[in-house]
Length: 552
Image 1 (spheres, rainbow, N blue to C red):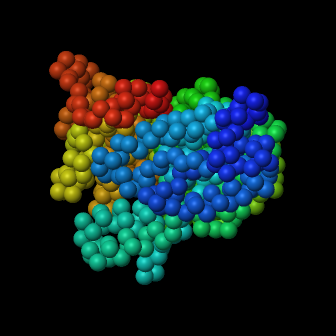
Image 2: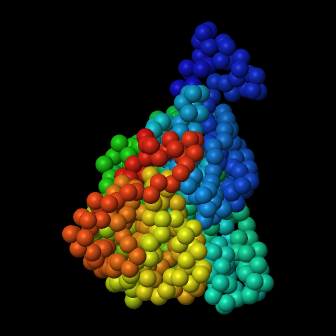
């Protein structure tokens, strides 16, 4: 065992003395050392219930013949960090989490890990660490919250708070109604109820084979989740014994399967960043070309909140990811028969699955023949941009409008609140990319405000930043190259015409090449001031969004 390096032999008496000081017995010191990387924190509602899951995992580890050690990693709630400078820390936290897990497991020579996670950047951060370390690992995603209810109206986080702010600004609801909704939008702990980034990544982790079947969709407050946590702890010692490694499970085929499911579900655009980064940590060549290729072949078979009233509860009741396997596998040649950490194949899981075809539509009768996500190109995005098609009304798949340009999310928010942004405008928010932000902030606040004010089908918003999985409307993110690196988005001026064509997968600034050359001669990038701490280090090392925004 790896842990023999700290517990076997005369020369390791000092190490054993310290382990005994922690309460280990003579019997337990001989067992596999299993770390529980827990992202518990009272700050993040998606993680506030993890103390109970830690206990279940620990029970499972000891029942399965291992010795458990819990250690903590940071977690950021994107919803709380949203709309202010705190969001700059969200995406960078992914790499920080990976570093923390790698450091704890590497320094103490752990034999295996159970990775307890839930929200947006924590799950990919832990997967990146698992692949860097390449020791036996199981991922436990803590699960979604239940839906809220207010006087007969079913609520989710986005509809009950973010979009409700826009409705209040538009005079559609009273302040008293807004206050009622914010109290009831999130009635339990757990990740937000729709197919936002946290739940998208939970689903893709199950597709990759790194979590147990059913884990992605089981509610955070369910007994099913507690059982899954116990089972995840129970099996890790067998994975150690049989040397089942993350790089055996996460392959090019399983990553492409994850892309297929992402497209079929209409998941968060953030998943593209994270899958690219996960692939890079495994040394696998995955690019935007893989997304573009598959997006031409995969229809959307389910639509969840924020694009519909269905939630993760409905997906779980309809068969969960196993039901999605059953729907996709036999009729999608690109979907490969990969295996999970238990050795179960996609075909085996699909064969034994149940699916409610009223929720998870069959391939011959999909929600739409369009995929959930798409990659756009054009002079505005020579290296690509991303759109969540599932959140866009088909009537605005082709859109042309005049630019209103802002160098900060906050400036754009003020313009929307003050009714400066009108129907037909294209809101441009730049210098919010990985380097320019730094940190590539999410733009949930302005997009939700546009929807709430009735402009969701009348305006577009483009950015070199990114969007929450809860975003809907004509919102184009991850524009590459970003403004600070000389991307065309940095040359846009108020009043310029921008044309977006989702059908043709294009996004273009309708300004002549001659005029653009003139603007380049006078171009001086706007620089966001950051302190000399973590964000400054991140800014110096991070790659572009087209490469996964990886800090190296």
